[in-house]
Amino acid sequence: GKIIKDVMSRGELGIVEKGKNDLQTEADRSAQRCIIASLSHQFPDLTIIGEEEPSHFEVPSDWLMTDFDPEVLSKKCPEEFLTVSEKDIVVWVDPLDGTSEYTQGLLDHVTVLVGVSVGGKAVGGVIHQPYYNYQTKSDTNGRTLWGLVGLGTGGFSPECPPYGKFIVTTTRSHSDGIVQKALDAFRPDEILKVGGAGHKVMLLLEGKAHAYIFASKGCKKWDTCAPEAILTAWGGKLTDIHGNSYDYDKEVEFPNKQGVFATAKGLDHKTLLKVIPQEVLNALP
Ligand SMILES: Nc1ncnc2c1ncn2[C@@H]1O[C@H](COP(=O)(O)O)[C@@H](OP(=O)(O)O)[C@H]1O
Ligand SMILES: [Mg+2]
Ligand SMILES: [Mg+2]
Ligand SMILES: [Mg+2]
Image (cartoon, rainbow, N blue to C red; front, side, top):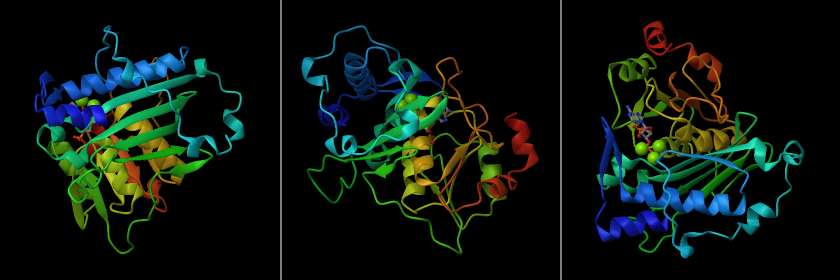
């Protein structure tokens, strides 16, 4: 988070266009180097997959994080993970989610995502929001939300969305006709178009939206692993638009080709899926 803020303060974003409507900045590159170097230093047998291309330069020594969160470590590890070894774990890293919004100054849309999968299932995750409340509080360090399936969540106060209303959240920078058709089918009371998969799942976790609907193949495994794990740990659900769960094993393809459909705790995920029109389902087979 600090690296991301430092790059923004210096004002030289070093923007590279990876593809159509797909940017990368110095903050994406540096944050990934910090996260991957720190994790692989402490856990050499982990499989770590990051969004950005690997860098072979050595990272500055003050970028190597060595401390652990005592609050999380004070909790009891769920039985099912006691025998998991480093080799069974795949970590999906999105060093900066919401790059498009970052370059446009919509800073609270930006998050850092570190997702942990075991046996292909998204079970653990961290969403760090470096610019949380940055407009109201001047020297905030941001906040860090976490979740582990079987244990619970921390770093935020989960809330259920309001009754008698249906609020959906979706992309603000990667929409198309099919994305819009899927949204329209729900006749939502409100559509929150915001950046980042992490940011959108936070809206579900904090009761600001009922569903995150993205009928597009644009999101990748690093976008959804951490958010899915935290959402699942709380009681919500994230699947593709057909209702199938994504596999986060190390061999899988990166794109979430069947889109994203996520619902807050207390919603009937299965019934809501039936609202998605056949034409939309056919577009993302
Ligand atoms: N059409 C597309 N092309 C490239 N990336 C896409 C995309 N649609 C979604 N994404 C990626 O999915 C994430 C969430 O998208 P959105 O904010 O539009 O909902 C972003 O992650 P990054 O910002 O980490 O690249 C974004 O780049
Ligand atoms: Mg990107
Ligand atoms: Mg992303
Ligand atoms: Mg990213």
